[in-house]
Image (cartoon, rainbow, N blue to C red; front, side, top):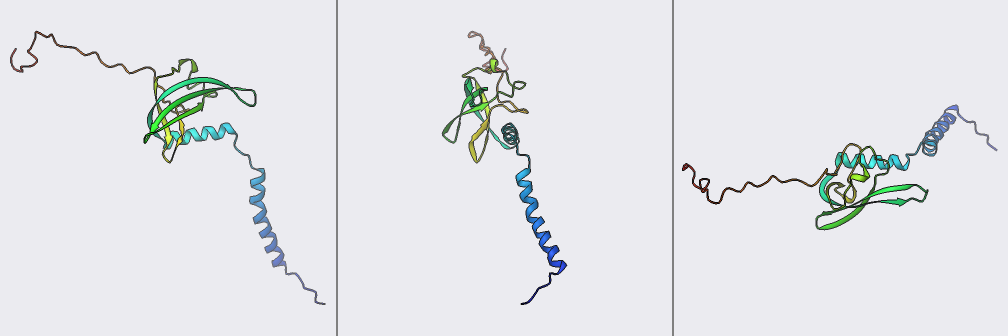
Length: 158
């Protein structure tokens, strides 16, 4: 029977390999995972930085009961990209400093930011950006000339 002696370098190599495998595994197990609110904030920030803008229409603002008993304020909106209609909802419960739910009017136009490769990923309101419009655009009044005054038709003649 042969007894093998273990070299100290082999022991050190096995311990280094074990540490190299165990360290990432322990990090994955014990790391702090982002909350749902942090993930949603990151999604909104991503869309503000890299999303495209398209015109949309506010459909409604409603309150929905969540599974955990909270009441969520949802903003429903509609937009069209490439001939495809999208109807989406955005939770604006935690964004009271950006948007006042009482001022949102159904039927008003809005701007929608969406992800180009994934158009259903969209927002109307974020912390740094808002697609809500204050009111309907006001066009300047048209000043019709006096029908008997034709001087505007003949330049140089007064």
